[in-house]
Length: 416
Image (cartoon, rainbow, N blue to C red):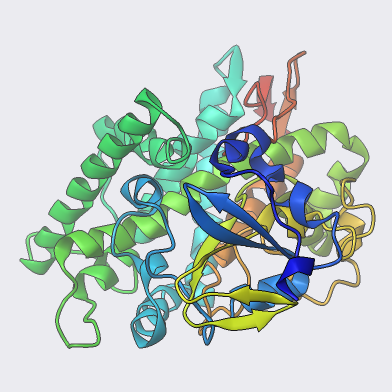
């Protein structure tokens, strides 16, 4: 019966999200026998899901839709309006194929090479600097990488501006006050920038490279056979390059892991399989996405809980990556846990779960893994540096989280 399903007794728990951060759902669900918990957010009854079974339900497109699941404050900053994150059914599948068409083996290999080349260029720059904030520098490195990979022309004079705006899209969606307002302004500037490029490609004023994001989004036709609205096309181009800039947070966290576990650096540098395991553990262990939203598209009962059509459902992304029922010693950093890992679709979900081509799993997961592997391989094999005393702790109350120092290095040089 519904009465057996745990629920918050308070009237509203919106403020608890800011208080608990990444632990908002885990502290409620993981202490109970079910994978569902009821709360209220902004006056609305919300079902919180966790565990593998909860993830399977969340990604069941027969029961869950994405339409109207994301708050306006997130659409007007992080994701943009009318992008792939808001699509369901045939419209989503058609748009998803567009994204997946960019993820060919040749394209992913090119991304690895571009990333590595930029690390080498930046190492020369860092060699002349007394101290390097790796998080700040990697944002620019990845902005350059993302734009080159996506076929976006980027003039030197605009690099810092675009890097700053793309970073603000990521950092301001959950903020309150001026930081959030700046994130909205950054969204408008970024969309206007890409929309101008889309128009130039369509009018043959800019020669764009086929099979790259800028060209494919500009030329894409939706189910009705019409080209995407230029602003929506811009939103989708940003949905390719923005996540690559966001990887800078994983690079900062991965740098902390390499520093705290120096014994694994050689393995990361020389062992391809271990490099992959280390990358996956960085993605699992450190905070990135706290939770994701959907809405029930019908009335149904699951694990004794009665879902209502239109009800908001939040999936516990961070909690599933730290669920003791899924991961042994989940709060310990241990790449070896992936030695016998079978690659489940609903256990490791730092960027969402489910299928790639037909589900709502983030199409940017493959590029993320490739960029991180290129970065960690370069750092351990070619980048020499010292780590001055600093505070590289991080808070689970802050969304998105980051090492407090951003991870500072000094005496940067090429390893012989």
